[in-house]
Image (cartoon, rainbow, N blue to C red; front, side, top):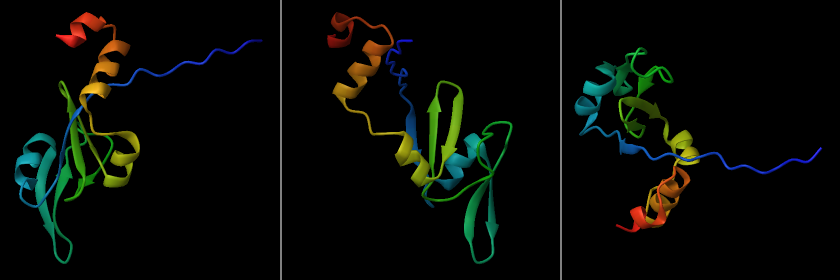
Amino acid sequence: MNFNQYVRKPFVVEAVEVTEENLEEVAKFVGEVREKQGSGRYIQVDRRIVPNVYRVYPGFFMTRMGDHIRCYNPKIFHEQFVEGNPEIIAWVDFMHGKKVEEIAE
């Protein structure tokens, strides 16, 4: 039996780090701001919108890809995502079938 190697197609997301300053704005996408004495403010997540977490705290990241929104704690986010640059974006575009000429434009 011969095995071949495959690379899973990557995808690009937009992301924002959640901060005290943008907590209310992020909450509009994913849930409702709450406060716990001694712990500070957080977002109670609407699980119908973001099924992978219950609460979002400053330092977490919110990602979106089209209509799909997800939130990640900082450790998981940095394990799964790297910041895009022109070379990475061009490679992802190529992996999704864009021709080199289209990418250069």
